[in-house]
Length: 241
Image (cartoon, rainbow, N blue to C red; front, side, top):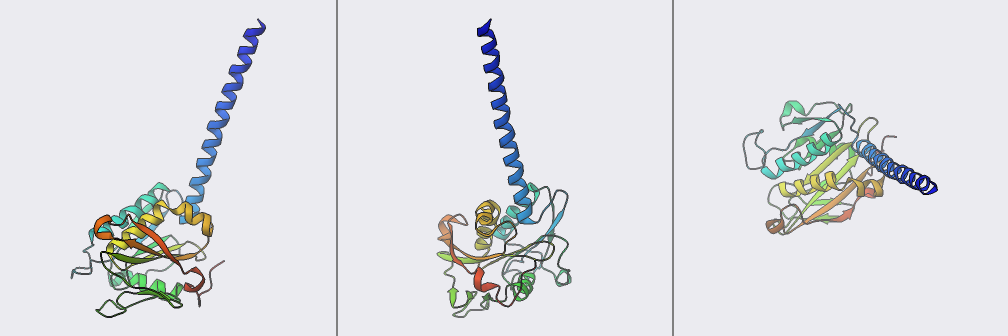
């Protein structure tokens, strides 16, 4: 009989240990989900806005490059993973006057393709400049405080990825030199948010420049951080508490 009692005790201990492990995993997962929602400023049944860039070579404001569409899918998937709904806002002048605040916002594309990006950079990231779209030595060059990143299409392209903190909700700006680089930034943000949380905290702001290497061969997947402009990009703008 003592052996039966010992067996029962061992079984009970195993059950308790198993339940404890499952509970710890559940709590860890819930904490991770809560941190993700806090990072993106999204809650269950909330709504976020994605400002969509128009295709640079199209006359229609509703035409979207397929790589930009892929970027939007990445962002929408991250939002829906937080239990939030997504409103797509196309590049049209009547949408530019939409008020800030009240919900998380993602703005994809350069100021030429998406005027919302230009307004956000001018207001919240004044230390960052984007070169003109026309053919010139500074074409779409991303620069801040002496750091300059000029494109070499198909071989090396750059995208600025910034998180702006406001009093209510964060704003994410993905300002790329190409649609592929926009997709790379969206993928990096949606899948690498844990890395960003470790570096900048759940509510911290940041401004990174990502480099997309040999996009002709690897598309948006071969990406690396080539510059952290957080210290200089926000000069002239005070973060909300």
